[in-house]
Length: 516
Image 1 (tube, rainbow, N blue to C red):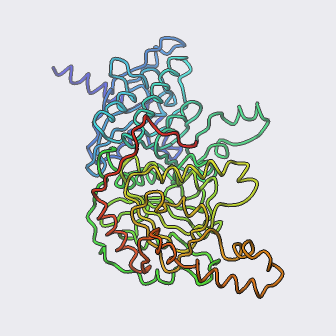
Image 2: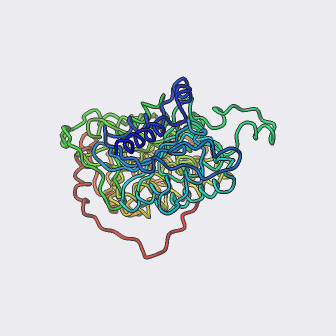
Image 3: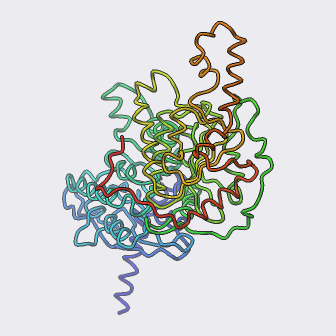
């Protein structure tokens, strides 16, 4: 018995060492944690239960039979984050570059690594977090490793909308490997040490003659500010994993579970007098919508998503009275808060995530319309704008909307209007709800007076008196109530409380056909 225990401990120690001390040291020299160290930071202390520690690859070609390492380049199992169940896998770059093999990915006899974890997550209704640090498919295994990827992709698809899926890119993620994170709900990256691309710099140079670095092509800055592939990036491994722990507290375990309700010490009746003067008197002067979000949130905590991309719209999570709420808000500081292609895509995806996982949606509106221009029209702003409209109309979760200033044209409809099944639609006294702004409207309606500035000014004043306020819409029932800005937190919280047991369903169908 003693020999068996010694042998077991020896095998475990081999697995814990991964690719060996030299490769572990090389990982540390790059400022990166090892796969196991990352799990220690991510999960609650002593909560990790590992699966398949002794699995090895099946390849006997190219000298691979002498490179069998227990675990085969990925650590899988389950644990808890603040006491809540989560399934995890962590790719180990010290073992053959973390390359994906058949054992690494494919479900063989219900006992192989990543797919097994994903299957268990769906079966047991808990999120999956993948820590990606891999050189890609294992070339020595040929098509078998590609088949392994496809098995993972299939599970990403089937798990979508059932359990939350989170990807953390903590090193290279290239070629076919990028498509698994792309199908997950959220992607977080590490600055200067992680990158994602379908084809690397060498291939790009060979095909297009462009010279580009890995960081420029697929680094964290590129994917958070230009491509929108990633949702956030942080300075190092420890910070990103701590932020994932924080983020995890906002989301439910599955699509039938509620998000966790945390104890809160912030009075729900708190008034914010400063909000009464947030909107400037000049309707063309910008202000920071983020200030409003932070001031109405429990303890001023706002977890923003895609902060660096499409800055003319804000999305993220807050808590109200301890419960998670998804926030979508136009940002007047950027492009005057206009909707465009990028902001529509960004917000639509966020709204659909919230709806899939029963997270109520709060919308703050200050939108003068869709951004005009040939680049937008040629780029398909019609179809992309329709994505956001579709997402709001389809959503069955509680929806509360507050119009703070401008709500013009079709953008008024798109931004969670009453007509898209908004539950509570409030407006501040500063709200302007109209087809368009006064100047443009008057120049169209009173075209005959274009040469007379005095008459135009009188017409503008009449138009503003009629439409530069929320009461016309309120008279028609499109606005439920005009509220004082200082009371916004209390009114929104009460609205969501009244919608706690809301039941609404869409017509029976296999799935919708959102304009992709």
